[in-house]
Length: 257
Image 1 (cartoon, one colour):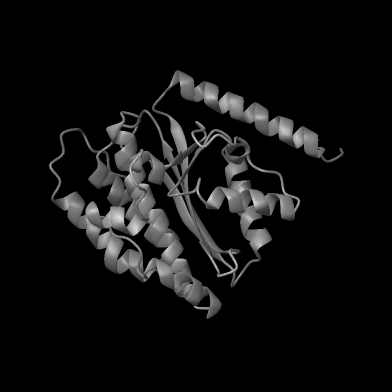
Image 2: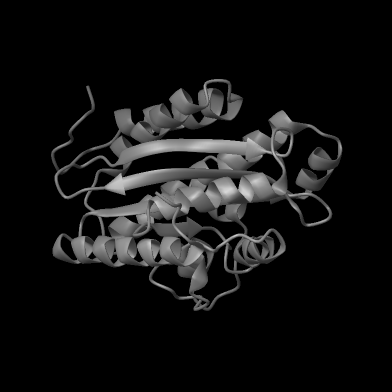
């Protein structure tokens, strides 16, 4: 049996997308979100990527969480990192890609990488419309027509844990090869963005969940996936535990065994 051609692969992805969107239309509460973040060196090349897959279903108050996965230049080239991320998106053709400020920089870099490295763009990135239903840029969503704010500024205003290192230091960390710090930074950004996403989706009636319980579930999943992360163990998980323990729930909470 011969391997499928590139055109056949593209048609298969399109078919999977329409099937996934059809299922989502029949059960509006069932949807998959992929939250992603990227860090860069001074040359604007991708130095690290992290993403988290969150599957929201109609039958559970707490989403199914996969990851976050973290990859950096210490282990893989830019092409390898982007290819792995594209594969993750292709595996979830109906998923909504969620970023903070992605429409301003990240998506442009990813499209440049696809052209430079002869890669096919996932469906979430093919649509050039900045308001595509396949993506959510939370920076634009929360700012609307006001001046855009940086992620740590918004997080601080909402009392959400954020970057362990100042944003302006990331280039220096990359140049000096301080990869554990770079990995912590990109991981923290995904965690912060995911919490903002959950709040955003619930406020718009797109999901039904208890945010404190979901935050703790996210912290547990992330710590399992990244057991060496100081940011998760010392900052994010204690914050999530406190939020969960002091929450006054108004709907049933189903906890994982």
